[in-house]
Image 1: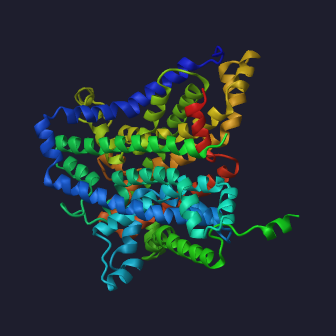
Image 2 (image 1 turned 90 degrees about the vertical axis):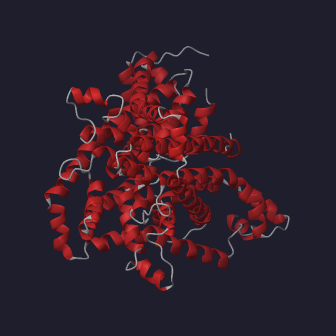
Image 3 (image 1 turned 180 degrees about the vertical axis):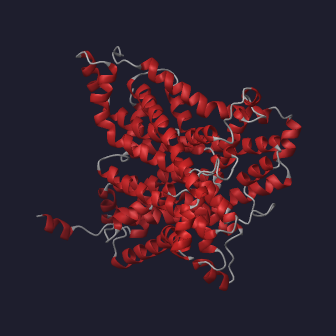
Length: 273
Length: 293
């Protein structure tokens, strides 16, 4: 390796480590420390209490449904944006980022306004007998909204770079569109889809602002884990808050590991020299 | 010649006219329902009770104070985060050192952590039951339930924003230009400002715009560390929640309309910067970080 002549290693690395240490590592370490200071028995009884278990269940199930919906809708959206030309395509492409740009609290109250019984959608749906606001379906819709861009934005570049020759080869062998999509295109998209899926799922597990307005926030049924942590804090039950927050943190780390692994796999197969 | 070629070429997969129109129709309708409607309903609800309620909400001292808090928070958090992002990108892309992969992962952690978890974590550092809480209290320094806490929590949630835009780009651009500049006698700062910065300015601005949008809109983490004191520690998103739960829906949506406008401006800026090459080709560039040393 050649000798590096550039200056500023100590200054830039020093600033970086100090900032990351103070802003990211220290608080998370303090949280883990607090949770660990509970005895194992006490920790377990908090994180496996019926109310906590119910919150994991509604959070994880809603996140799963929202992610699967986004998998299909996000793929379709990415497909339409990359493969077809139609008026307003650029505007639609830009609007896909709205869920990232719109503050979660704003998304929360506007989704609630749409889906409450006298809202634009809620009034139609309630006549059809479907209640969305203040039910688990409301949670799913909020999660769908906030995590939609992940799938679109991970799949879009791969779709753009897809080599038309592969499709042409399959077509010349007489494959139908559906067969070619399933056997040729989908396998090429799978790594990116999986990466987007795990990002979307992780985001949904931790989402708070967009959900609490539209969820009914009833313990044991529509109370998400993030809200349960918030409630424990309001009750000054710091130990319970720390313990349950540590569960969300560990889940986030697990999801981060999965995402990194999937992304490194995705890159191995999609990047050409 | 190209006309002949395109005449002979079969249509690509999914290009059948019926399927194509059907898919575009379904996707755009669903998109309008899921993405456009939430934006439109904000304006509708904000002006439901007339322009007067709208302007009086925005003129109310509490709303003005909340806007001030949000702007001040962004004015501190965004520049500090930008400086960090530049330093991190310089260290990671211009030098080789052990633990670089780990550092990259740690910088990205805030993206995966729930904002609520972030808020709780800060409580256990600066709160009374936290690491420094008792000491801070004894010295009468207020961090939590005050502006410093809001700024710190905002910095946590946005820590990766600038760095993640700069790192892939600076990695792809390599070190040759900077090395040439230094060998010709330019100082480190001069090299950075005249060689590195012009090459990454759009990506930097892109990161700053996204960072700013997130800081101004952050809700979960800030709601834990702010204490939600009306007219004192309320940022705009917290103010929206307060009005909403006070049954002042029109006021909540009026305040929300400001943040919705910010979101629209953010998207416009994002598109404008992407036309100048920022934010694109992330996949290849990130790959360069993992393999390029």
